[in-house]
Image (cartoon, rainbow, N blue to C red):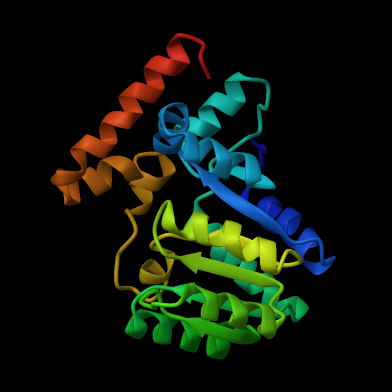
Length: 228
């Protein structure tokens, strides 16, 4: 786990590798993933393949601070992705977008090109049949940054395949970030975000998520027992 003191530092660190052609795989880590890593072997394989793991959850940042990284903060994936897009535009780094619904992806392309000035070299919505054709398109595009919005763990599994074919790119799984970016899904209000309570906001909006939020309790127990 790499402790970062802010979104800007994380973006700069990741893009230094992308701009240098070294590529990489940035993986967001939250309490749910830590719990799953301990019970699902495939998650251990994904984490081991990542070149950078960053604290996308407030509990993870808290643990890092308790473990000797006093300046570590949460790096929300949606904010990190947007910062990377801004820097990619400034540095002329070619970007490939994968995932999301067709209309959502259209909106993302429009905003990135018209407002940010991003150089898009290809895109594909998440409803495709032949992954081999998509992999061929990514390779042919020459993208240095590939962001994948296909949900966990599908996006991570796809990234592992893509890195075998096109290892020089920076890959980032972004979940529902595209929906947030185009305003389809609202983020939690600032009050919740500043206090590390986005999970509570999501639970209040969607009570059916309560089973997933039990992982926060499991994570706390692991931390209390010194197992993480």
